[in-house]
Amino acid sequence: MITEILNDCPIAITPAAIAEIKRLENSTDIQPGQALRIGVKGGGCSGLSYLLAFDDIKQGDTLYDVEGAEIVMEKAHIMYVIGMQVDYADGLNSRGFTFTNPNAKETCGCGTSFSA
Image (cartoon, rainbow, N blue to C red):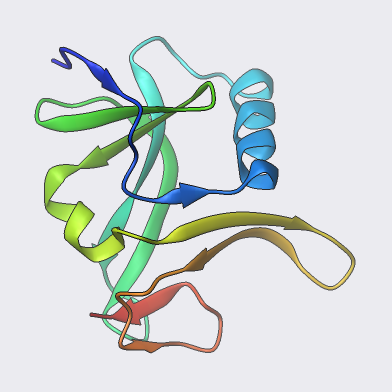
């Protein structure tokens, strides 16, 4: 399983996103051995879509402590998200997590898929 928790996360997570992640950790039924998984998966209008969900920590994952929030990532996904910023908006016009990815060559209109 995981032998160490790293502090130097390859993505930036804004204070608003950290606050929402911590709120979700405390308000949902997160089991021991689970953390917020950030990564990519095939699909979406541009080829890849972002993955953001609480999930079991698996063999080969890298676990990061980002200001008290546990983030888990597959090593193979890091090349697609390195340098990305995850933010959270809670306003009238937009609500939810947003991704700003410098590796994206094209993005879709909804901002949840991209091509690298």
